[in-house]
Length: 429
Image 1 (tube, rainbow, N blue to C red):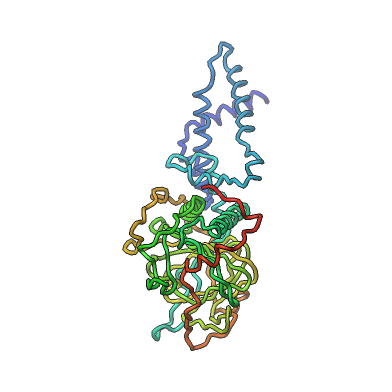
Image 2 (image 1 turned 90 degrees about the vertical axis):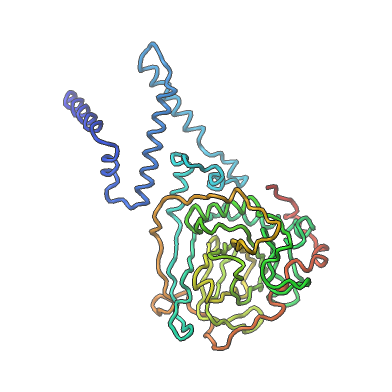
């Protein structure tokens, strides 16, 4: 019996050696989706490379293969223990996925970090092809065409790091440690007024500012550059196919909402190219879409489509969803933070703006976008939580002068604010 087993093993080994690697891969991956095939191929490459490295470092011994086998056994044990993540690094808030974005290279497909990254990417849920028809210029038009909602892009630990980073910048802004137009904390005088904003990359006016600059990018003003952590977020979103590599953001605006704060109906200025995206933190809230939104009262708006923005989600705006449908955020139920990343039109960049080499040539991961679904807002059977909060009116909205106050215009009012003790430390980048 032992002889038959040995002969079977020998025949099997000979058969495997006679097969091409592609033939083995095709057999093992039969029935797999494209994404699973890519992951299997990555693991095979990693295994082959590991064996090659083991052969290169195998010590020569007079005792033959026994000594070499003992050495490899010890090496595998040492590798297994030394590659385990240090629990203290997680307590400190470090994250291997954020770090891997900085260290990725063209020959890094066999790295453990990239394998983990593929697994994380496969867990992202993507909702696309949102549908709601309105009559535009006499023609039925899907005003939500181009919208995408990606959830699971940033996990809980990463969200915590990002929120802490935002709070640190708020503290720096209150202390006057950021450039003048970077930080704005208008005086809160009524419901919906007083949202804190922090701008990086460019200074943007929602309305005519005190110097007479029109709405749009103020080209002769300077603000602080994109922080390191925000650039890692951008790399993540491009690599994970949330944003296209042809439209890598080079600016962003952070909104810090207190309960009751809002953003009135608007279409983002065309000084920024499409697509752009908004990442949500702390509290889920609704965003309203429609070609005709109405201001009902301070912080209350009416529109045909109400879409929830889960915590940690990334909403991508493009096409009709960015250019035909207006959008707004009604008064939020609790504290919320959002970060909107946008790419400036080349002809609208600030005069002294310098391109960041870190954001050049980001390559998306090679995988298939399979887990996305279509959402019909005008289909009663699928509305559920997407039911409009108000009945759409035929009256258009009007943005009042104070709905979007000029940013960075109230430095004196906020310099005297007291800084809470738990946010008094500064983050180094």
